[in-house]
Image (tube, rainbow, N blue to C red; front, side, top):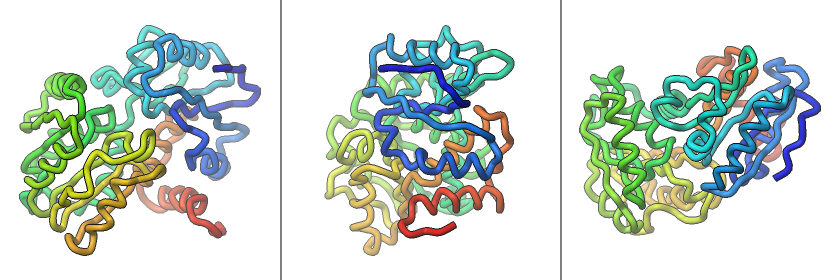
Length: 320
């Protein structure tokens, strides 16, 4: 891994296959629209669960290089902060609580880490879930995967600000029980009062079985890297999606098997299907706001214009 000093103000994307991300084409257009001035985006690719020294090398580089302004971190959010916690001068409340960093920025000569997913996952969910849905139904929420994005979404669903509108049952599954234990500890530190079921599911068929317990209107979330960082899906083709339910994949690129499985049942079960596109937009704009110290709207006409700019890159033949 060769990290060269930036020659122009640069924001980085720390991930696994960053060159395949739409952000490489969207960012320059957003930068022009937002008036960010001369700047660029660059990717830093590392394998999942990279060596501790590699994470420290990246964070040390960002801290020392004047024109390297910050970064968005995906996939490596937990591992990076765990390896380089001492290199940061400050953590926001969510980063300290959740032990992850999705945003790296600089302010007044200090290197700062932030965790944006508790905010952005809630914004993305609210974009498609009807207001009062949980209050008006007996629907459950089933989150597959116990990484940082799952912790964030559960924090949103079970937050005290949503006491009158929460799922009747909240289930989180993961292939390995260790991450579920970590998530349980994080939720305990948050003081979450909603009962949460943490269930190890080493096989996709185990997730299928949990899906069979979901009543109509329930939400099923693929919060794993399967479908993007690795091929496949956390469920099998036999998994039944809930009637009039919601299928949400945090991924928007890759083989997206989970989404295809949902689409095959969409008409029969009257499913609402969402990919990770709006989550992608909310997540990136939140970190860009940190890195460039700009207030960027999360709703309204100005936000929708930013969405339209991004969508034009996603749609063949689109002309702005």
